[in-house]
Length: 77
Image 1: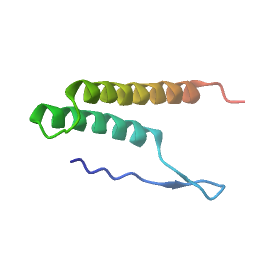
Image 2: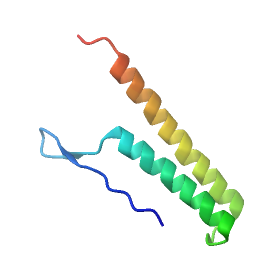
Image 3: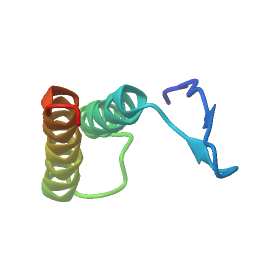
Image 4: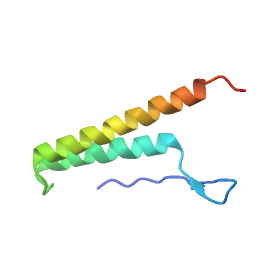
């Protein structure tokens, strides 16, 4: 099982934010952990389902990275 520490950043409206790079790292670590658990026989779900879910999580992390790069690269008004 993985352990991850994620910093919370207070927003102006009183909410809490999580840095995007920590979210993407978490998604990728979970996907890798699931695949590792499947390989070692510790996962109760079938291998194909775990692989599909891990792929979706990795693709979501990639999409978040692309969106963040686009946001950071956008011209400032």
